Length: 476
Image 1 (cartoon, rainbow, N blue to C red):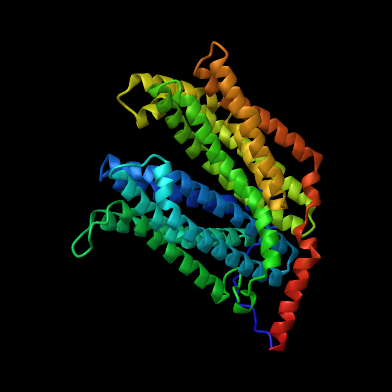
Image 2: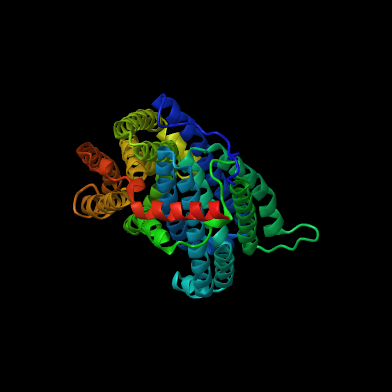
């Protein structure tokens, strides 16, 4: 006999005020993203107490960890897309089954990558140029990070699944708790105290594993309790490699899309480096300001993805389109207003990062001013990208990311800086040019409406497997 469903009731985002839904979903996501940034700042602060070699060890590891985060984030998006569409359709059994399979897929990928990465850590760090005392520290940090990779993947997917069903508050509370715990564990493991030895750089990785491991365990326990928006059942955990393959190819383009941003930062940095230390510092400060400024846009984009997915699943395509338009307008207005403020206070903002270097302050504030008034166009790109994700058009999102980097941003930056009288300022001007061109391009593509034609819930092969699972449960 089928047990009664005890999961908590979640809002129905297929009806009701759109702006209210966007706000209720995006605000917790924004706070969670800010907390994640604080998480990284705490690590940086305590590692910095160990000196330049320790900071170098962590810095050399970061590109590989960032790529892994991109992989995990992209694959997790597949869970958000499928869960949100089936939630909108009202097929809760599908939601439970797909959630279990997504979690299994992430654990399998996480274990495979962990094993390979652990044994390749030393060669990778050597390839990055680590030598002397930095090499063993960087290798140890990366190896420990690889060991705990399965926990990072696990919590990523927990957040994505909960976002898919519309619960963004529970993950926020867990992230808040892990940040507080990290505040305690970082100095304990890095510097040591009492019976706890000082692990140095390795301690930072151990603290990260500890907090992420706890977060993953709590998340899975909540899912297994059946009292959340998803009920994780043992009967759904048997690997369905056919479904996992579909999810992998749905999420992998999103991974490429996120990795492209990392690659873009590296390419632009190589170009910037040719103009000297002042320009490198100015570019770095501008990049940090930009990464913080777009957090609200990313929050709105994630909220848009969930709402669009649920409404497409419910067959409410017109409402999904209205959600995307509303979110784009809000994001454009919000980031434009922020851009005006940043433009007006560019110098003090830049000086906050490097107060004693007037040359960098002047160049950095110039870069910030050139970018600032086009922040609103970044908001449009982000929210339409959220629409792409929610509708399952991850390949188009990947294509737009590749176009942004290889056809627009880097070529403009190179040509303007190397073949015009602008010099290094040409790199700065490539950013607003890219923002405007890509915003116009994404709006034109959105207006064509091809994104409306993809509904994952209409795939009969997924539904067939779930129906068979339900029949088996009923027979037991």
